[in-house]
Amino acid sequence: MYEFWLLIIVLLTVIEILTVNLTTIWFIGSALITLFLSFFIDNFTVQLSVFVLFGIVFLITTRPILMKYIFKNKVKTNIDRIIGMNGVVIDAISNNEYGSVKVDGKIWRAYSKVKLQEGTHIKIIKINGNKLEVEEE
Image (cartoon, rainbow, N blue to C red; front, side):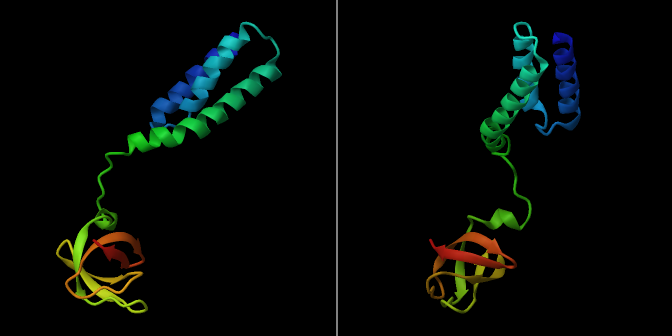
């Protein structure tokens, strides 16, 4: 039965190499565990259960951590790069009305949870459509 698990490991490794998106690596690990288990237990149902269970556990527990490290140095290229930037209010922002802010040399419509006067230094919290949510710096 170990030949089957070796074949699964090889196939999943080839798929992982071709996709390079961390798609099957979790199940490669579970197949390795199942391969080791196949030397002691001949029951295919047990082996398959261990393969699926460990694959899912590895996927759920390690993928978020790895994705955080892999995309840690992601370069923001579009509008999302201004999140976290600082700017200045050029038209006062009221609770129920939009104002304007200047960020990165451009003027944006903006809103805030609190009233902000003209000249107040702000920080971009998030983007909602084409308007910026800001807070006082």
